[in-house]
Amino acid sequence: MPEARNLERPRGSRGTLSGRLGPLFLGLSLLVSPAPTRSQVPPRRVVALAPSAAEILFALGAAPRVVGVPDFADDLPEAAGKARVGGFTPDLERIVALAPDLVVVSKDGTDRAAYEKVEALGLPVLVTSGTTLAGVLEDVARVGHALGEDGRARALVLALTKRIAAAESLGRAHSGARALALIWPDPPVAAGAGTFVGDVVRRAGFTNVVPESAGEWPRVSFETLAAWNPDLVIRPETSENSGAFARAFSDARWSLVNAVRAGRVVVLPGSLLERPGPRLVEALERLAAVNVP
Image 1 (cartoon, rainbow, N blue to C red):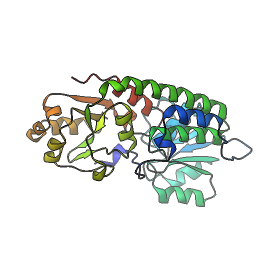
Image 2 (cartoon, rainbow, N blue to C red):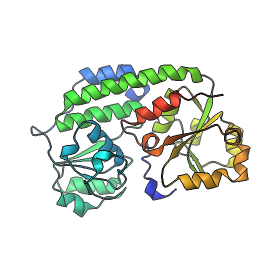
Image 3 (cartoon, rainbow, N blue to C red):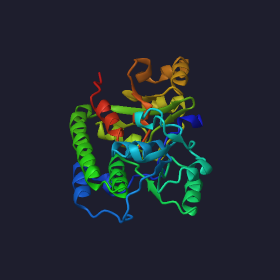
Image 4 (cartoon, rainbow, N blue to C red):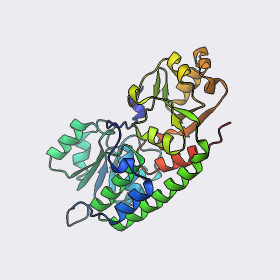
């Protein structure tokens, strides 16, 4: 898959304990649990080294403090006019030149060696690591605390928690429907159950056709896809992948997959589905509202 897509892939298989709890319980626990320690002076110059990190910062109202963002944050209106610091492997010189007092990175969306070098330079680094919707809420709370915005973070977590619960309730209508989240079409790459995309599929009421034994982001054959026989295919849409999906689905081999042949393909914006940030909740809401024949 092309690097330009910058999909933030989780390495963890099932998330934390809170990732396996219900979203409402998690939201309430974040509202009352002790927050980690932080510097006495809230940061005023913040750099984000992953699109999800930028999304979290902007959702918390920190745009005026953000001085640098990754190259793949153009879909976020608040990123306009901000200095660009590179992609998965950021430009250290640009980061240092911005003189940040906080750098927010993603465990799976930022090159680890790069952010360890940033930390070695003495710059404060906060690592987000959500691999589920629950993990995203935890990241929101942690980033909010680091900014000195605990109240705003609690309000955002509670609002997102309520939306997750409502979407899960709506998604119960999908009981028994089997779905495949197709992240890339050629070669076919699917989202397994242990990914944040898989978590959205499950919470939207669908059974993920990808078995846990297949791993997190397996490359699969057309014969395997046909054997899994999903009722629905879910795919992201980006400027980079739209042509690839159009070309792939014109391949006769995709007719082996009944859902594709019948046109049962749900397209979601890649900026919502492929990023472990607050807007992942919108991906859940859209998917939960899908009518499956």
